[in-house]
Image 1 (cartoon, one colour):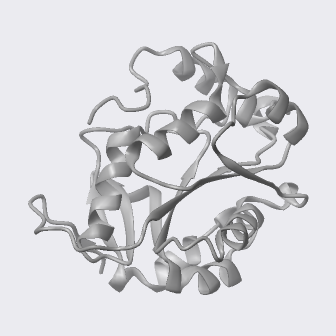
Image 2: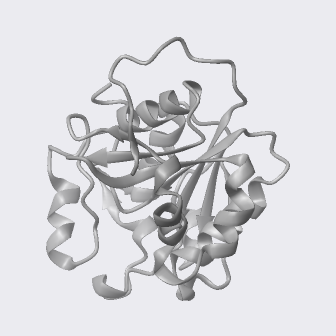
Length: 220
C-alpha cells in the first residue's frame, strides 16, 4: 500500500537537486495530428507553460523530450534555458520518451527526477513543489495524488532510474513499475491546488482557454 505524505512534514534533509523531465513528444492522434507541445495556451505553445511549471516548482535542470514536429516546436516555442532531446521512436508511446529522458539525465548529478506530461495544464508549480518536498523529507518514490488516486507529477530517486527505464514500454510509461513498488510509494495529495485532466480530444481543447487553468506559479 502506498504511503500518504504528512501534511506537516518535518525539517527537510539536505539532498541533491531534483531534475524536471517533461514528456512532450506526443503527436496528438486523437486531436487530428496536432502535436500537443504546440497547442495554443494563452497565446503561446503549451510546452512553454509545462516547462516553466517545473522550473518554478523547484526543478533544475529541466529536460524536455520532443518527438512529433520537434523542429517546429523548437522554432515556435521559447525553450531557452531548458535542455532538450529528440525521441525518434515517439510513435511507440510514452515509455520510449521516458527512456530517452532518463538516459539524457544520467550523469546530471540530480538525486531524483520529477516526471510531468505536457498535456496537463491544470497541474501547476504548487503540485510540483509539494512532491519535491516529499523527496526533501526522505521519499525516494513519490507521486501527486488527487482524491487519493495516483497521478502526475511522479518522482523517482536516481537509484531507481535504470529499473524504471527497463520497464517503460508503450503508453504505460512507468505504470508497471509504480504498481510493483506501491509499497514504497509516497502519495502527496494535490487535489486542492491542481486538476489532473489531459488534453486528448477536441472537446478537451476548451480547457486551454479556461480561466481556471493555473498559470505557472499560481496556487502556491
